[in-house]
Length: 407
Image 1: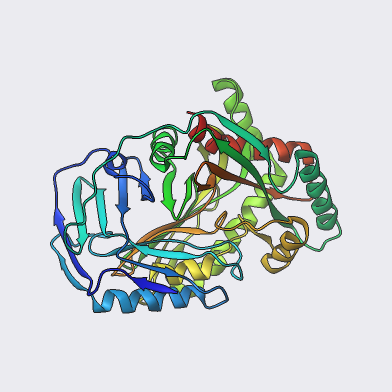
Image 2: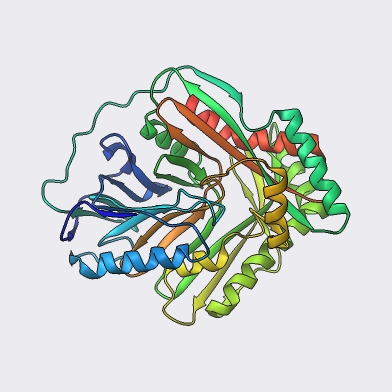
């Protein structure tokens, strides 16, 4: 289903003075956001919206819907940068056969990048007053699909499958339910996440809110970039323990092999699209406030006019969020996980009328509805995985959104 709430689309982008903190300009309910280190885009209101039909052609359907929408629009863009002109925010479910993927064209987008700032509006008088922010108050937690012992048992079952040689890796997700004292203001969560995790991409689309460290793809003209994360350890209690944990992560055969599988998955997906592709021989260490990751930054140049959604379609799901081999891992996830991931570990981000955009993998996130939040985390399970250690890793990842809720 698609809805154009404003017809015809009359889009105007103008340069504005630096708004500094984009998130403070959001007026109220249902905000859209993609922010890192204070730069990015925020939006509000709806000029058009589409519920993307599930199935193997969903990204192609999304691209065609956007092409029709943008093609009919009257666009006045005095900025001419990626993210200027009309911009759609999107969230796709992890499972291609699941309902819930959505694209929204906000009525207003405020952006800040590279020392410049701009405002895009669609239609007349699109502005809304900024309402006061209200923290969610006390938070009560409850089990999600599985209790902690049940989830450890599921991890043990996955390890046994891997040891039979059926697959090398499977990523298992865990959810946790939270109920707040009052309705959850997404702006509060975004502000807390952006301040505490500036290296991550803080996002909000359709109630899915989080701060992901994993950039699936950045598309600028013919250039693309992807940040691959696989292999994780918790932060230590101080610099010495941090350094020791980082060194142990680099020395871990299990984690290094997990990372090799993830990088190979990205290389396989991008090679057919690119005239040039640069894949680092060794990972680097990405240190975040709660965890450390093995990370590889892959860059390339597209060989034709593929849009960012074409690249997303080729890459999702990566081994980092599915497993290796991917098809087998997805079947094991359906068999063992016992839950609908919804948008967790699916692509989330934005696309403009040029086909440029930035999309991440929706990690360290929660689905917000009224006073309730469903938190998600996942772990890459290998043959050498220990269920108790994987539970501890999942709990460390869940703390990102617990912090956002509790402050």
